[in-house]
Length: 291
Image 1: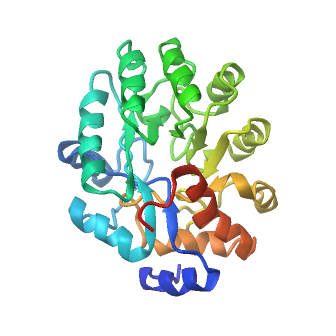
Image 2 (image 1 turned 90 degrees about the vertical axis):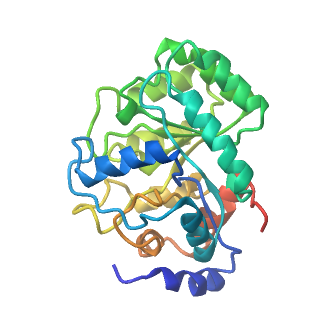
């Protein structure tokens, strides 16, 4: 790990892109974020190891940090981990989007009867992204309570950033099986599989190849924080160039933001691949904000 955040400006200028579109950024209501950070500080069982957070600052400071890094458009992801909390999270996220116009208005959901009502409601209000976390929420992608949710999202074509892989620690419903079952029934569902689906990268690449609206994000992949690289064939990622979008997990990362870009660059897949991942693919998905 040699890159620092100050190195990004020159790198983006050399690539000739206006900046970065980051599809995997977290902003949460203060009481929720406090609990998330406490879990990271305690190296909770779903993490599997100590996890020092690099960007522990206020919302306002973190927004300015992203802008200084050259991030022109970013999601504001929060994820419901139990019934009855998604509405509170979504209300807070709506207010955040009003305050921060370069963010993508984001929302979450949980398998509960009310989701059939609040998901179409936030879609009608103009939400631009959803986040769901199968590991933390311990629910199955093919839970029948999510059928009306997937139907509404497929019809509206609002992307869902979905943590479905079994990393960093497996859960009772992680892995590709449930996601594949959902896609068989909702084949146009716009999913962004977080973390390349680590460690089941090949299986999720299979889904990206089979289903036109399935993409994968790069969040925390190939970074030095993990002792072993993800089981991913870089040449397969090259072939999927148009389906890979940049994600970082900012601010909950244990290294400088620039290291994620460095980790992807050293794969040696070429400048065109980096341009697509850092800018073009995300811009096609979420727009470019005020840039």
